[in-house]
Length: 494
Ligand code: NAD
Image (cartoon, rainbow, N blue to C red; front, side, top):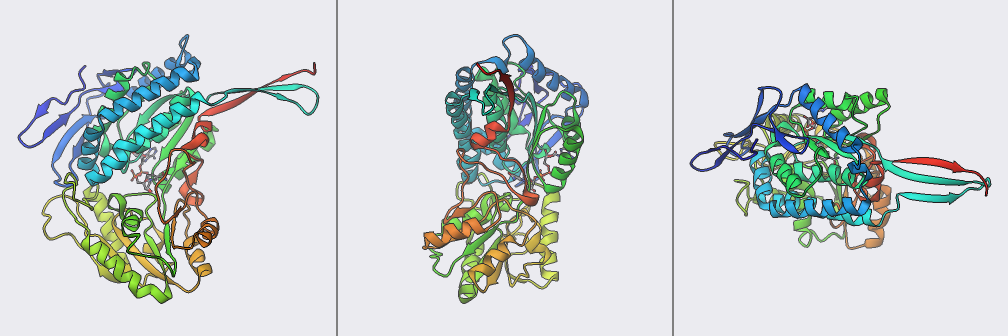
């Protein structure tokens, strides 16, 4: 069945899909239910896709299993052959980059400049990185034993990977999960978030064009129930999840019961530490990206800004200007810096936190409402709070919107203490001219990743969190290792 959108209307293309990507083809779904997708900036319906049933998940998991077990199956391909497929998939994604970026911007409100730089470009880099990595990875090793014999260690694919992703960076997170899994020789059943399913049809198209063997990648649509079903499915060998900490705990518990390997990339509440000598004007762009990227719908957003007491007022003024000056608008326009939030429900959540900040006595410096010139869509003004109590709700809980809190600190040790006073541990930054001090502070902050005068993850390095931010790592050789299982054969002394 075709995967082409079938209905056109005046200003935009209504994307109405009737198939699911299972077993290498766009197949008729086994249920008649559908998921409606809306534009974040207008609230209008922009498309619909089938809602997968449990039977569709069964079919997808079975297709993935067959892709591995068939004679000459994917897991048995040489690393170089798999690398060629990954490279071809990277090129197919690259060719669709603009279209992917536009779909994401429409669905979740991500400004198109961000969507092009991240959603379109980084997945290509991630697939190419893993292609190069597996070409240079030894999957077998003979180790001389210390007890006289030898150990033959093989690293084999873990099997069928159930991958569940959120709506905030759908293509990026698809690449984080699919690229290392395929590089390792695993097959994947991917479940995107219902809010961002339209872009997955472009991904499926790229997969088909790249010649990825049938069943190696399958996509099932749906919400929590289909996610739960996939996590517990007997044909799934490993689960990898990105999303909220609450759901991550539930998935972790279920995988614990099943003794099923799991990787969890969860929420964050990271700090940007401004040192006495920081040149704020020099770092204006970097500070914007670190704090407000994708309208604050970013797990690594540095939403707690820690300012030295001596420069507190200046830092508050600097961020007030940044927030007030941010260009809020249609995410499809290149000049837009802040778009709408993903859904009405999510906006209500963010607004609840803004009200809570005010009720708890924080000083609302800028924003706090809805932009006057935006009648439709789920916009919230970029918002700045000052005088925020580090223990208060808005300083402790992940808001996932364009809401920043500035807090003063008395000494560097105090700044590190406040930065670490959170249940999360995903990211953070330091802004200073003193690089030696910066490295020391980077090591003192408890988090999986950290940036000095900059924050952008890179495919070569492990990415992930500690504490309530998750378990395990993606990207880098560590992300590949998480999709492999070592198996040992002991050999007698010669
Ligand atoms: P969410 O946890 O509500 O949903 C994430 C995905 O899980 C969706 O596909 C959803 O349908 C599915 N799901 C929901 N309940 C489930 C269940 N019980 N069992 C199985 N699947 C289930 O998160 P969200 O609101 O879509 O995304 C925002 C969250 O994601 C934020 O907390 C953010 O910090 C986090 N996130 C983390 C990272 C990271 O790498 N650490 C990256 C991006 C987003």
